[in-house]
Length: 243
Image (cartoon, one colour):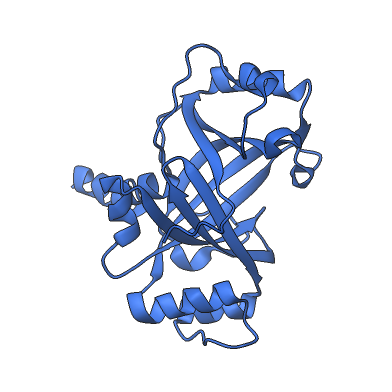
């Protein structure tokens, strides 16, 4: 799975109280630029539909701490179907690489119907995914949605993101729906996620702005938590308690 030719980057994750993350965000805001996609409001929403195989291999590899693993997802931004991205995220320890290609709504529908076809006109990554659907049973498992505040710097090709209101949904056929999905949070109230991505080095001034002296790196997977705490499980638990 690990491809030496891929462009792997460092990825550090911190789950922290919102007050601590807000302080770090204000420090970064004094000298780092927001990602251009954030627009006037300074953030955007991300909605991702994750896939797994017959044996839940991606989930189980995450639980088991397998060093080299991958995951597949289809992602949209700000609930817009205008840009749909098929992505494969590969990991080795704390290094990550991402391959992606744009797909249109017709291809997305064929994936959901399980009748997508391998074609010379497809992006190679899409063909790899379709082959995985047929050979490994790749299928939708959960939707993860959140709001992201992004900062970027040329030094070290650094990207700092604050992901808030991370939640999961079992409305698997509603990825492109322009509405709120039935969902539940996957983190405790008041807790949010800071991600730090960079190439060979993290610039000192950025690292100092982030670090408060109390932050601790964590092994964190939105996909794992979304599968562990799905919205449908919460509904079943609530109904059971009321009977």
